[in-house]
Image 1: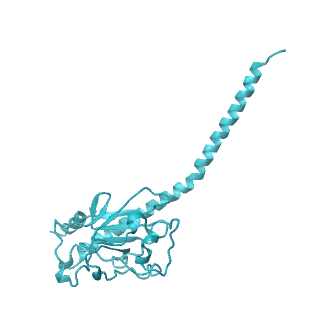
Image 2: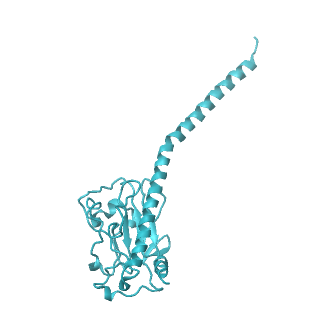
Image 3: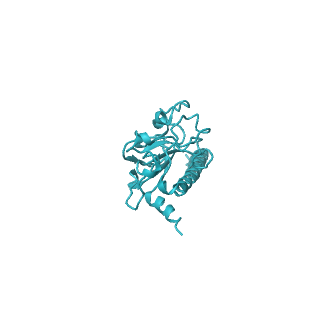
Amino acid sequence: MVRNDGKASGERGAVLLILLTALVLAGVAVVLESLPLRSLKTREDRRASEAMSQAKDALLGYATLRDSNTLGYLPCPDLGTLQGYDGQGDSSACGTLAGSYVIGFLPWRELGLSPLRDGSGAPLWYAVSRNFKRTENPTPASYPAIDAAAVGGLALAGEDFAAVIFAPGDPLSGQSRDPTQTAANLLGQFLEGSNANAPGSTGSFVKLAISDTFNDRLLGISPVEVRTAIARLSP
């Protein structure tokens, strides 16, 4: 019997090459399939970041353009319905919520903006601390001056904030966004974890990696940033 080990080895090598090629092609296919999802997430991140930055600039501008009695204060959120977001955008009365931070839709009209939405098309949300919200007290003359000792009372990633802006992203599993409902009733339908807690004297918000169970994007406004914006007014 004549053995042909060279031929057998060649055949085995060809088979291994075919298998290796198949594995490489499968890996490439997986990567290519994931590219649209990654691209979509990148676009959503960018649009959310741009919208929140625009909102932050407008809120800091608002704090510097009030009369001398309310200099440094920030507006209350829009507490209306989801379907009214594009047509309303005004700051709702929240003076009755004394001692509590308030959270709702961004009051875009009050800030001189157009309706701001994140990359998923969801309206921006906004929380303002009890120490910085404009209608904490009934009349402008009774507003205490915001000084260097003022704290925000809203905690995010271990830091203190006067306000926090949210880009809530697409609805996740279990979330249902009824357009006829008000912001108070939709809090847990837009935000996740402690971000969806009912308002109290202080708030603690979380900023986690985007996943199937968390897709809130957040941007804070610190008391220092408010005071710095006011200081720029000085000649």
